[in-house]
Amino acid sequence: MTTTPDDPTTALPGRPPVVDPATWQAARDELLVREKAHTREGDAIAAARRRLPMVEFDGTVEVVGPDGPVPFLDLFQGRDELVVYKHMWHDGAPHQGQCEGCTTTAWHLKDAVYLNARGVSFAVLTTGRPDEVASYVEFMGYTQPWYSVREVDAPVGGDMGYLTCFLRDGDRAFLTYSTTGRGNERVNGSMGLLDMTPYGRGEAWEESPEGRPKGREACWSWRSDADGNATWGPTSRPVPQWTRPGATPVETLGRQGHHH
Image (cartoon, rainbow, N blue to C red; front, side):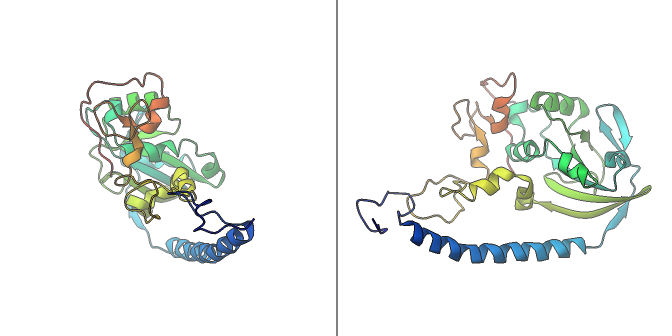
């Protein structure tokens, strides 16, 4: 039976209209044209990104890892390319008070095996004190290397909340690319999948049909209470932390984390 979006027996409030398979396929094919154009433009931008110039800096500057200070060049692990995520940090905050956006990004980068296969190493940098960082990494169960870049100048240190790429040529180190804000979404596979769903991310800035679930600002759902309700209240923490051992509800936060 053929149905139409206005058919009161098939229309579902706040949900996509119900149609027959042929109508759905036609609409899907129309969107595919735009998707392919988007992919081609992304390829062109990536090609331009590979043609950016680069900046040389002192690769012997020391960062502090789990075994103490090491030169930044060690982070390449003998490979020629390195991607780092610069994780924001709130000094003295309990685990649940750290940045929900950075926590979510780092959670999606727990395994760099496919980067390694292409000659690219990965590390997380943060301005946190080494002892606080070590405790946090243990709690979160991260397996990728973390380093404190406290009081280290850019491009190794500096502002956090960035994805940054470096190139090594022997003992010489170069900055090649850096991005922040929504540029960080590239590593967050959950975002890409949510963008495929009819309800999307559920964030207020999204353009969605009337009646679809609405949230608040970006990252609003990345903090929740123990029951999974999005909140920045006193018992909230970044969502991935609820899966960690010892992640029990808390009375207060030493300092509330903020998203970027």
